[in-house]
Length: 333
Length: 260
Image 1 (cartoon, helix red, strand yellow):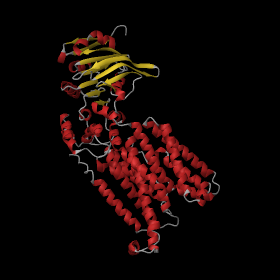
Image 2 (cartoon, rainbow over the protein chains, first blue to last red):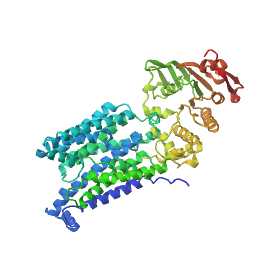
Image 3 (cartoon, rainbow over the protein chains, first blue to last red):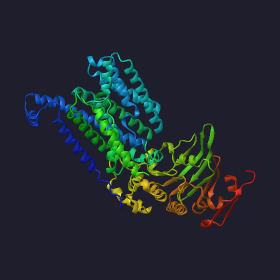
Image 4 (cartoon, helix red, strand yellow):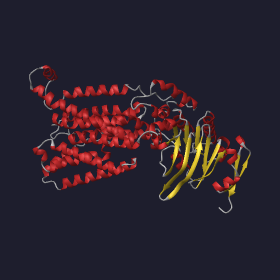
């Protein structure tokens, strides 16, 4: 049997973009506030503000845009890291960036800064992510393995501080709120949050998307990539910077959201003949789509306490990962 | 002006000299077999020649310019390097693996320009891989993978090919096949430098022999002039017989050299 030719270059990004568009439009019509689709469409074209118009422009639209930005950041970061490190288990949290963001955000909740100034949480989260990324790069420069190990060390350190903060939480309520924040959510996010995170996420995405040639050449191993003229040190720096900005900003606004960055590249890979550069754009689009769908899920599933987004992505992501492992066992002896 | 020259190369690792005072000039159309005992510094020398490792002393010149003064993409177009036992880390197709050899010729974004498609087909055909074109490289046999990697190295049409033990792990037929391909390259005017362990194979195919011992150049010259029992005793510390000449040379090991 002749192996199938991979799909033409534009097919998968096209399909993924279409799915993203559908999910985005669909997500605008689903929510806790029951507004009929007809009212929403009317509100779109009405000159004066109505309840439906407010729901659309102040609640659902920012939520959808944030889901797209954050999902794309996670998907692209996962694809770049898996390609760069040639490790199918690499995920955006690997570099300690999301741990740093979580620590910064929890500190803002811990000291009650978030109560007086709502953007304190994302701002401190961003600072934490940058500090963690800088620390990882400072210790991990010079090699892939050292980068992975430095990332693990920084993640561990951030986790230790996080545990410390929870341990000495001023009140059970603060600990509860911090714990809840870490589970990840897109609810109660405003345009301010987007204004804060979007520039960082977009710059990060732009940086990461320049690494296509490098991750392709790295499919032959580091020595051959080097011999083909790829600047490995520069590629690693761009990757840490890009993941730091994109995932750091994303996590500091939404909290930790697992599995999207890990699973999206795996779902894409068979359709592009496993060529690392061709997983980048579809992984970003698929990550955004998956996060939109998961967020719609949190709105559709009615529970007393809000079902957090990070919980739903993990609940769906983990079984998908099991399935990937089973499939891998069949392919590889 | 030599194609590739080494000027008193030295590499030290943890206070120990891995290479010391290695100098030579290589010209087009040479097929140089680099021989030496394990740990003699063959891989290190090849890495330095390829510009992947900066020597602690001395300099490598390619086309009349020091390696350090050549941009990495420019260098990648001039020479190709094949490490020991190269492999693909993702199940990408043979076609994609071979096309990666064009990396230094491509712009930063986009797929393979249409104009390069015939070159890809030709490189795949030249290494007898047409039947495996769409097969994942991770499922190739050792001989097929060696041919795919050779095609990857040659598709960019580099003037210099540096290969570290290209016959390692290959059965006799595929080892012969690889050596005759390398000889064919030199016959077409390219400079080929390859570390080879099988001395009979080296003697029959290589135009020149370069021997390293303890990081120093023990001998370098046309194969027929250099290959001798004395050289083998000095470099490998074995008693050996060299029978025949040219394409019918046979190197026969008799035993360890006395006093070694």
